[in-house]
Length: 156
Ligand SMILES: [Zn+2]
Ligand SMILES: [Zn+2]
Image 1 (cartoon, helix red, strand yellow):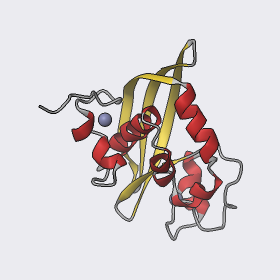
Image 2 (cartoon, rainbow, N blue to C red):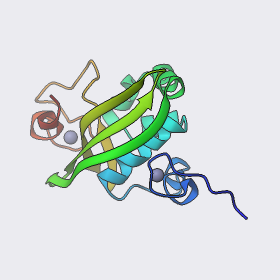
Image 3 (cartoon, helix red, strand yellow):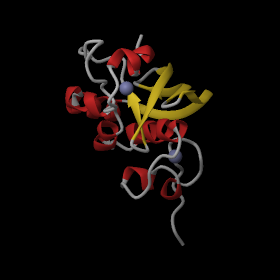
């Protein structure tokens, strides 16, 4: 019998939930599924997946070592989806969630995250990075649009 391992995101068995996404065998069909799988990726220390599911133009700015220690140093306890808007506009979605974790003390990370669909795949738009394209330049998500007409709206 196969061992039952709960998926960190809370949706059942890891091997049929977020693991196929982490292994590159399946793709998130919705922004909410991507959000869940990114939470699980922190719990399972899948840093490559965290990087690969961040907006294409932002990936080079990510600090892999910092992501890995953030992933290892916390105990990931539970994910709660509070609100999910699959279409904020033609190519963007919003997921509001609480991530429960512990770094020795119980903590709750409450966030409204925005996601962009590019060539049929969903990506997280990281609002915390230092550098963004200038408004008139190509968007960070890989679309042909100018930043100001695309993802800029969703970064605050
Ligand atoms: Zn899952
Ligand atoms: Zn964009």
